[in-house]
Amino acid sequence: MSRAESLPHWDLSNVYPGLESEQFKRAIEDLNGQIAGLETYCLQYRVGRTESDAGILESSRLKEIVDGYITRMNSLLRLFSTINAFITSYVTTDSYNALAKRSESELEIIGVQIKKIDVRFQGWIRGVAETLPSILTIAGQSKEHSFYLKEVLDQSRYLMSESEETLASELELSGGNAWSKLQGTVCSQLTVDFELNGKKEKMPITAILNLSHHPDSDIRRRAYEAELTAWETVREPLAAAVNGVKGTVATLSKRRGRLDALHTSLDQARIDRETLNTMLDAMRDSFPSFRRYLRAKAKRLGYNALPWWDLFAPGGRAGHHYAWDETLGFIVEQFGTFSARLTNLAKRAFQNNWLDAEPRDGKRGGAFCMEIPAVDESRILCNFDGSLDAVSTVAHELGHAYHNECLVGKTVLQTRTPMTLAETASIFCETIVSDAVLAKASSKDEKLAILETSLIESTQVIVDITSRFLFEKEVFERRQKSELSADEFCEIMIRSQKSTYGEGLDEMHLHKYMWTWKPHYYSTSLSFYNFPYAFGLLFGTGLYAIYRKRGASFVSDYESLLASTGEGTPVELASRFAIDIRKPDFWRDSLKIIERRIDQYVAL
Image (cartoon, rainbow, N blue to C red; front, side, top):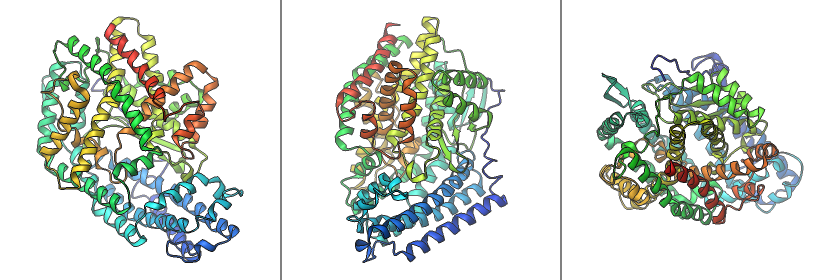
């Protein structure tokens, strides 16, 4: 990518003209009005955890009340999610924007009101548990939302009292959520003085992170060293933030009767501990193959053991950088080999500026896709640098947009997808592109470069994800006894990396500050953000293998699965394709596909 090349910023003007526009202000007024209306509705129909007559309601009356609640809550959440996405589009691309930050804070307070209503409804549903099944067979909102209602009933077992849940929601704004925002602000505004192409300049940390893929080994090494030095300067506030988030989660998990923080994450993922352990065991069994890949890479680069700064080093002659227009054309072309719906979705995204691709000061790192419910569209953030990895990232995030497209027509409460299934379409679309690049490769050097990009990603999702899981698990265990210092976080991270990468990396040059910039560690609402990515990679890889066998007949079944991810468990949805995720065979078979790529790489 040329430095002169213009990269797009996303456009949300079809949602609202701006944060100070009359349309945005009216949307906020409408949202507050809908919340007040739902609160009145709950009072009118005695929807509350402490209501004594809840358990004796007749089926017809219960159905009327539940149907009315669902209709109102869906409308409210659709508007709230749209406003939230609109504000997020400013906050994540310009952390210096004071108006956006204030708007975010104001919306968070409104969000607490919604959560209070939700808690009241959950507690009330527990009081009508015996009557509830009778209304789920009668046409109407309750029947159409039966999965949601059953899940609400099941999870209501882990509620504190209504007053305690209300207090927890209110304290979240100045507690866990504040720590999370601190991490985002610190990381997005961190800059580093760095010499590149003979010119010393101040670069945002996101641009420094991108240099880990640079074809020049000296630049990669210097970027790694500069990155570690930069994290040294902000490690104390970030350590305080991790302690604050994990301490909050541990306390609330205990008060809610959870076994541990992982218990909540498993329920959010809609899988059980046995399924997770089966997958993790299969992943650990595959580590020798990944270490074989890393040792081969080290040998190719002239090392006895691979240092961290070369973990993301491109393979072959990786001088080719993809121009933005070239990336768009290639992705549209390859998506067209799968389905017209997918390629048309990509065209809309590119033509209507759904993507924000330029790395810049104040913009957060990484990549994500968010849904804009009011206009049935998505928006994608990435930090494009012209590498093949960046092309894969764009395809990955467009996969999320494709998933959102398949969910259009469903209500918000019907589309609540667990992280385990949220990565299905993204991994699938990424694989379409990576396979196409490999198929077009005409030389050994090209194939090596393409396999390298694929294996870098797979190593991150299988090996590094496991290290992050081990890190978070130990942090939670130790945080219950006391706060941890920045040195202790570093020590846990290094030990976790040694236990997973093993002899595949030079243990003298690991990355002790991986905990600082990963936003996943700073969420009180979603702990263990890591393992669903591994689930998504292996599930998506397994489905892609089925697609290769079935061809075009696979597409409609696949889109039906994507449209159902908010209304079923992974076990149920996987069974549609004769997949049993509770047994190790499926996970091993998916890992074997990746291991065959390792064999190809080593042979080259």
